[in-house]
Image 1 (cartoon, helix red, strand yellow):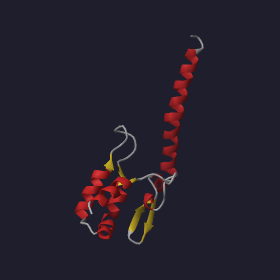
Image 2 (image 1 turned 120 degrees about the horizontal axis):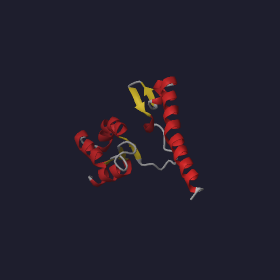
Image 3 (image 1 turned 120 degrees about the vertical axis):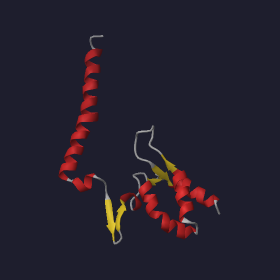
Image 4 (image 1 turned 180 degrees about the vertical axis):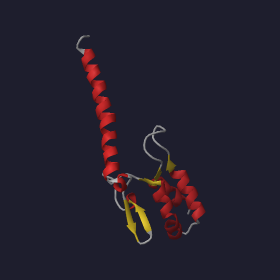
Length: 123
């Protein structure tokens, strides 16, 4: 029992340092030194800002999700290409939108595979 107390105490201390203090410190420094870059990657074109997830793949290349903002930006183009109304596509995007994992992890995202399958079944 004597050996377990220091081990548990060190585990708690390192968890707080490595899981809380260090990430908060690095994020704070990033926001102070690189305020625009720390808020997310945006690529600009002639019409304005384009979210980075529209022009790059996930690390594995298998992630079927995009942000809800990216999906909304593509609604007019996809509606025209598929020959459906924008209102119908907006509703389909809303149905394919998944919430945060466990209610608090990550951001809401659109499952593109599910959305495409849903749109294909509407034909």
